[in-house]
Every structure is written in structure tokens, then in C-alpha cells.
Image (cartoon, rainbow, N blue to C red):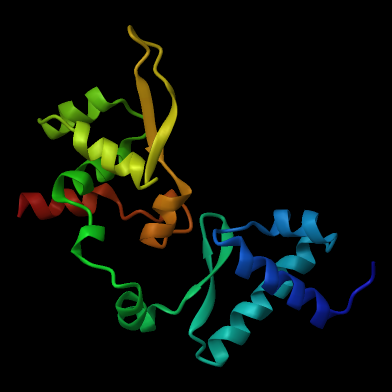
Length: 178
């Protein structure tokens, strides 16, 4: 089915809108039969179009795909509408656990406990429930404990394209030494 640029962009925009999570150019190409290079070009055009008009919605690259999200500049109003309260924030224990898993994955809960020096059951459960971490396998060790790693939702939560965008761990070690 032949389509012009306007129709192709319209279709891709619709896919981004309904996906609700990052979608790769290759996935959109497979769905639409638009060559992947063209998909990438059209998505980049849409990104620029949204930027130029200072839209309340933007298209951003997250987790090796693209996603339509609300403009961060309007975060106050979006949170007000959604009535988000303090309960959506992560506890210090959950943040510590998440940082350890993000930087050292894959690792077991026992390994997290050893690094933190305290039991991490509650933090791990919270992070799994919030889909920021998941079981990614089992360790070849007695008892075959679960190995944990971060998820696409983790990348979305922190606005990262991939794990390579995490700040170097050395940045944090300097802060502790000071």
C-alpha cells in the first residue's frame, strides 16, 4: 500500500500515541511496511514539529525506542490533575536498592543485602511491584537464587535511553570522599 509522507507520519504518530510505552523504529516498520530508515526520518520530523510548536506533548527517545509523553515543563499541572502524592516517591531503602541493581546487575537479593548491610526484602518487593526491577534469571549457585535487573519502566521512570546514560559510579564515590 503506497502512502505519502503526511499519511505515513500520521500513522506513526497514532502508533506512538496508543503504544503507551517506548516503541522501536523496527517495530513500527514491521507494523506499517514503511522502511525502517523512513520511519526514523518521519519520527525525527515529528519530534522537531512538536518542539517547534512548544506542544504539551513531546516525542522522546527512551529505552531504545520512541514514546509520546507530556512535556516536562507542564509536570506541575499534570501531577495536580493526577493528584499524585508523596506515596509515589521511592523510599531511601528502595532508591539504594535500585541504584545497586542498576549499576551491578544482574545480582541476587543476598548480594544486594551484603552491599547495603541490611535486609532488602521490602525494597526489592516494592521495586518489583512498581516494575522498576524484575527477575531476569537464576544464578548458578546452591539454591539457584533469582537474579534481578532493571526494566524498561526503570528507563522510563528516570528518562534514560539506555543504561549507558547512567552517571558514572565514580561521580558518587567522589561525593562520599569529600
